[in-house]
Image (tube, rainbow, N blue to C red; front, side, top):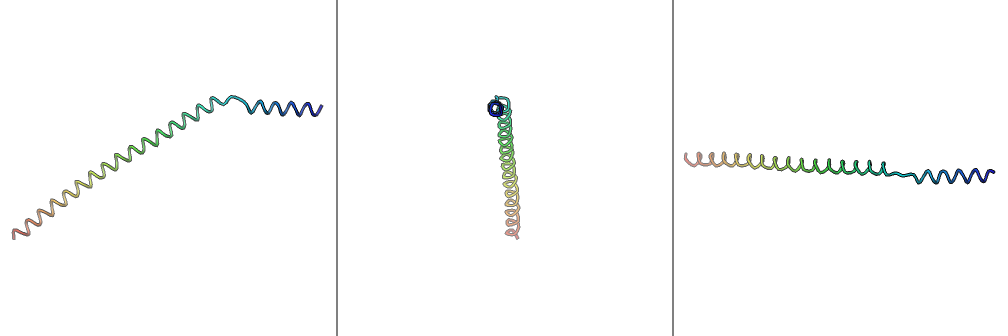
Length: 78
């Protein structure tokens, strides 16, 4: 009788392990897609920030160069 009970228990555990995980797999897929989308959005935002910083630096450098040219011109005029 113990062998029959043990066999039934093992079969029950085996069937329980074979349950359908489709819902969990679908939720995992959604989470993965959302995580990747967030990472792509963050990367795009960083690229825009970097481009804006580079533009601001170029403008600042142009102003500095313009001031240096004006100072050199004034010094040469003396």
